[in-house]
Amino acid sequence: MRDINLKYMATYKKRGHKPKTKVEKQQNIEEGSTTAEVFNTLDETASKTEAFVAKNQLYIYIIVGVVAAVVLGSLAYKEYVAEPKEKLASNDMFQAQKFFNEAVNGVEKDSLFTLALNGGEGKYGMLDIIEEYSGTQAANLANYYAGTAYLRLKDYKNAVSYLSEFKSDDEILAPLAKGNIGDAFVQLNQPEDALSYYEDAIALRDNGYTTPMYLYKAGALALDLGDADKALGYFKRIKDEFPDSSEASSIDVFIGKAEVLASK
Image (cartoon, rainbow, N blue to C red; front, side, top):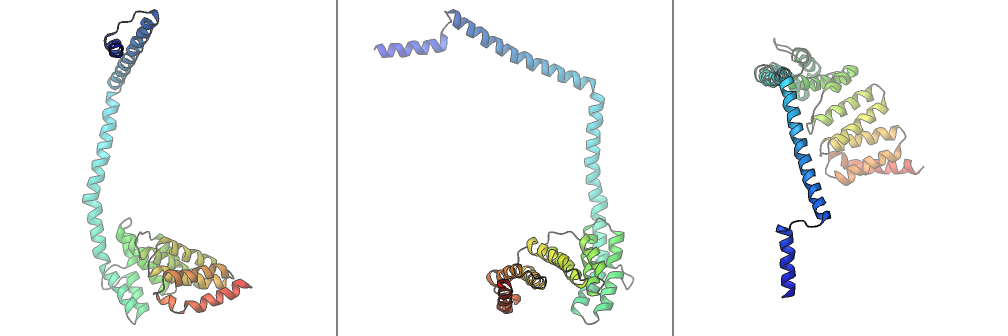
């Protein structure tokens, strides 16, 4: 019974207890003072904000108007300028793409690659697309086509120039662009630069087509540069990770050669 009374008294003190001692009174005064300070601070902040808004209302309206104009202008540009321009560029590039594809698969490669670059039959070539539709996805893709065409035409400096302008996240085209630059540097007798671009192509994507191809090229070039350990690493990756690739069919020979050179 005594325990129950004690519990009741404790509850009573929590809910309706009036301070009797000086210490309790002082605590209540301090708590009330803190609460009042908080509300006063909030009131002061709100008043200052209102005063600021009232004083700078014109500037605020101008800023809001500028932001709205930028957003609306961006949307309008995309709908009425960028998208129609992109569509027109793609249409105008169709014939140049056709010439390029025919060059890759056909017999008269040089003349077809030249047509792909400069145009023909009254249609734009890749160089025209790059100039006329700068900033579009079509112009960006035209850089890849132009660079690759120059590579096939043995104009290696232009190949590097145009391929370097191509930007893409595509699974195949992105590493191919880097690898093609590497091929151009091999022909320009700049093997260190070529190896760097092959390594970029390897790191850029991991797939069964471009990765073993550039692992092989990087390994072969590393051997030529006297870095047998690096070459061995690339060759072993082909054997371990891409056993079904065409590069893997004779990779044991290159692994053996790299191991002999690495042991010297």
